[in-house]
Length: 293
Length: 324
Image 1 (tube, one colour):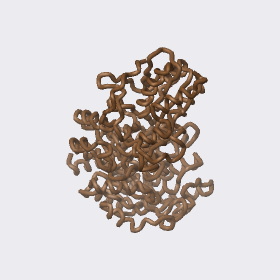
Image 2 (cartoon, rainbow over the protein chains, first blue to last red):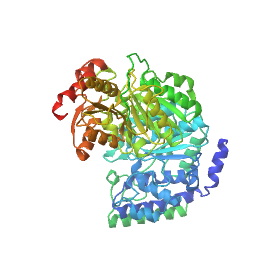
Image 3 (cartoon, rainbow over the protein chains, first blue to last red):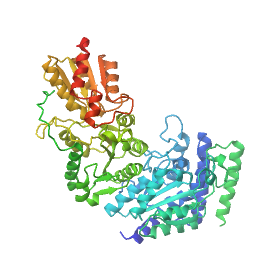
Image 4 (cartoon, one colour):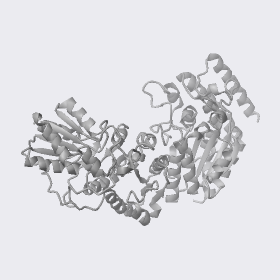
């Protein structure tokens, strides 16, 4: 299959406009907050920063759905920053992989299949994650298999920026560059924060674009909360030949509410009733803005 | 049960790793999904012929063991049957988390081949010895651990592994080991130990794995000359251990001796002791490497130092005379 056919094929099932995707993203943030407040646990900050990336991938750019999970040519996705499982599962439920209410009502509860990190007994999940720095090497393997078979699928992984301190990320980056895996697209959710504070204070990653470029990657930077910007980034990644692409998506941890935006303390925190009310009000306002965009 | 085999004169030149390469080359010719990965280790792994014959099914990852195993898991997830080769010392520790999460926990069909295992690297020292790999790998749920005893059994094991879709860790040594079986006569049942004995009842059972099986058989023959009946249990399947074989040995023998090229904790000896203690208490003597860096020397010298040879195993049985 020619590449443009692949894109058209993926796109035909994905008819929402970018504004509609932005609105969807707001609603899925609300649902994710509900999951976290109900379960009294969750990595809410990273959930909010990664949501627009996941929505753009699952509802625009990736050929992954409950209908094609047995198709070897489906695209492959690994959430390397596994602690953002709450938003990931909310997106998978929205895609129809499982019932959202069942997930929400059992997440992290005793005996639940919905563990606090991605687990591949859950429909739609390819690989278990949770320990950082695993996703990229695994995706290199998936992309190599695709090249060996001449398969049309593309491989995606989303990493956190704090995760980039793991040496295995750079082992994977090295191999992806060496093997010119242009069917591989890595995304960095560059929210600038990790549990202990600013990434640049904990362990600096800049100049991040130069680092990936030096490993043989095509680097694309975008606004990770702007659907047009994300859409353009993934289009560019898909069109680029001869090198793997990395999308450095500049995001805000806790994006969606003033309560938690850009605050390291919200890496893993459950909002109290008052905070939850404010978060919901902020997200409602954000939805209104999307409707009028 | 099989009779204790007649042992060939010394002289085998084919290490178990070469048997793996030959078996995989046959499989790769039939099945393009059989792939081999090395971490700058294709020479040590005896895999150069595979890489030359099947370049499209060979992947070099450089000196990067975490990448080796992570990439293998991704390949497996996409229908490949990856065999990841790296020195056992690095494979079992440097990439331990990838083995745990990307292979065992994610349930991918990755076969991890630990080469130059145990003290094969001799004088290169503790950094290059893998005396903890049985303990480490066995502790991971869904990970299987195999230490084949000779080249014929190694071939049978790899043929069996090619047929299943679960992950496994296989440890082989660097040097050729003398044959126990032969091409025409190599009893093998997956996940069942091979019991070698000349009588239904015996005085002692020697339960061994990997390179310790051959000296165990030699020890049984030495003991026979002394009028002591010893059986050998070739426990190549360390996990899932053949519980029934351990219990058979415990019931039929008065004494159990275990022999392994491994630290004294968490290996074959620990597992056998656990089973025997729980279900059929017997005196169990564990022969293993010490809980310390081993003496400088080649494998033979190291084994001799710690009694991990025919004379040492036989001496351990004789020394427990009061139990016989």
